[in-house]
Amino acid sequence: MIALLVAPATVAVAQTRAPAPLHLEGSAAPEPWTRYRGWNAARWDDYNTLARRDLTRPPGQEIEIATVTGDPKKGQELAFSRARGGGCLACHVMGTSSQETPGSFAPDLSEIGAAGRTDQWLFNYVYDARVYNPQTSMPPWGAHGFYTKGEVGDIVAFLKTLKAPATFKDALDDPQKRKQPVEDREALDPFVNPAAERIEVGAALAAKPVGNGKSCVSCHADAKAAFAGWATSMPRWEPRLNKVLGVEEFIYRHAKATLDVDWRMQSTANTDLSVYLHSLSNGREIRVDASSPEAKAAVARGKTLTETKIGQLNFACIDCHTQEHGALKWLRGQWLGEFRGQLDHFPTWRTSRGTGETWDVRKRFQWCAVQVRANELPPDAPEYGDLELYLKSLNQGLKLTAPNIRH
Image (tube, rainbow, N blue to C red; front, side, top):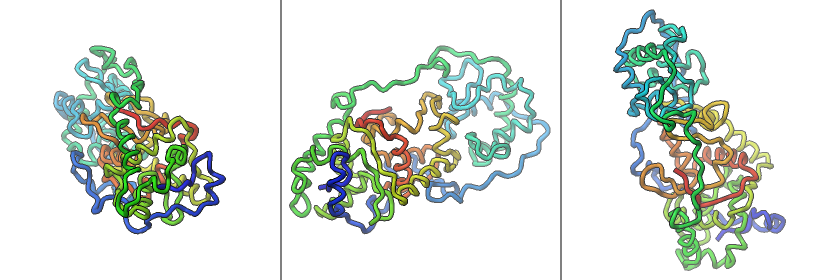
């Protein structure tokens, strides 16, 4: 089904071959694009996305206030509640023994009430910390509508009561003692990882006559030899589409052109084939090509996207996945990894939502957007291609292990 384009062992041969046929018209995503069933259905049209970075309103002026009045008890309830964007406890330790699984993403506030901060500073930092630091990782809780000014006053009143070091019920609640998670499950054991079952399903699909009566193996009889290493070199710049092309979009466009089937991105057939093709490169090092001027420009755009604040929470990728910000820290009970080490295990069986399912990396990008309350893009969006190529370039040299399993 897929021409030998970039497998490391066959690069010299691949360069002499004609480009693999691709269906070049239209979207590779389901049309019209709609958000996945079971995900947050809200829309956040007033806030930046990776495609529209001019929507979020800039911070206003610092609000002048002499003394904050509020209810500390209500403030604690708001700070500890997960109901509105995760709450303050997601990032901060906040003193009292009633806190459960606080994060270490941001500074410990257990003694903030004795730090000599003015009411005006505390109020504005909760309401919209961008007035002090435009690149802060602190969401603009008041300015972006999570809390009213009165509720911000309640939170500040609670903060002013925090004047003693933190206490914890157990080590699990203490982010400094909580053990870093280690993924040690047998990823390719179908009894452990349901995604591993899809390897055989994908292989069977590749051998099945479809559409025009042909199958993938009609052209690629020895898929294991043909595609050993292929997935480690994807995504790549595709001049015919004038954008970065990933494995899943390639599957759709090549199958449409050669087999006359409609295996759209995120469809079961597309994901199964992606799992199968990735598995044929397991144990090989990631080696994406970012040497052409066009690929270099795409990598630069991808890097810029990781620095772009999006959504109602006003987060950028770097806020969670670089050590300068939140990486290698806790967001409540979630450990935040660095960019390197994030793209060597996709497609991945995701268990964090209770009912597991196999995600390719583009679906992971979409989930991140929705989690920070930003409208996601269709999986074939050029922005996701640039982002994938940049992040994959940061994972150069890591060995592919797919499909894997993650919480």
